[in-house]
Image (cartoon, rainbow, N blue to C red; front, side, top):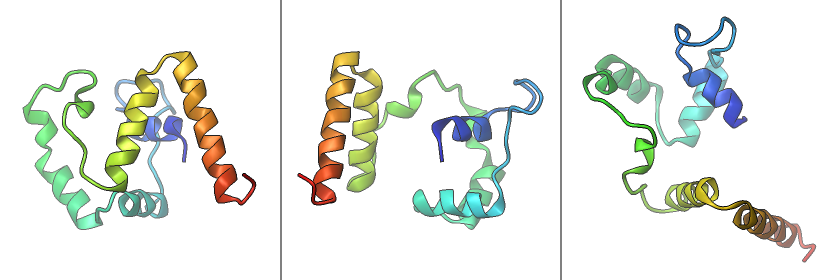
Length: 108
């Protein structure tokens, strides 16, 4: 699942060109919830409460809080760092990722 697809799922259909916003299939939605460690019940509760409508959220606010511990925290920190890195640093990230994948495949 690409970042582009997720952005289209999150897009407000009233704010974007026709056909840009996407609705995930029930299977895709369940896969997303599984990856996020959530459930359809929690998703429905959040949609019902709509807490985001009661406060102003600035650009980049999703990075203001420290992420939860474990793998999710590590992945979030790497994503944040990659996003903020210079092109040279991004190239180093990619090189490190390639090395890790090669090692995992037994090629290094």
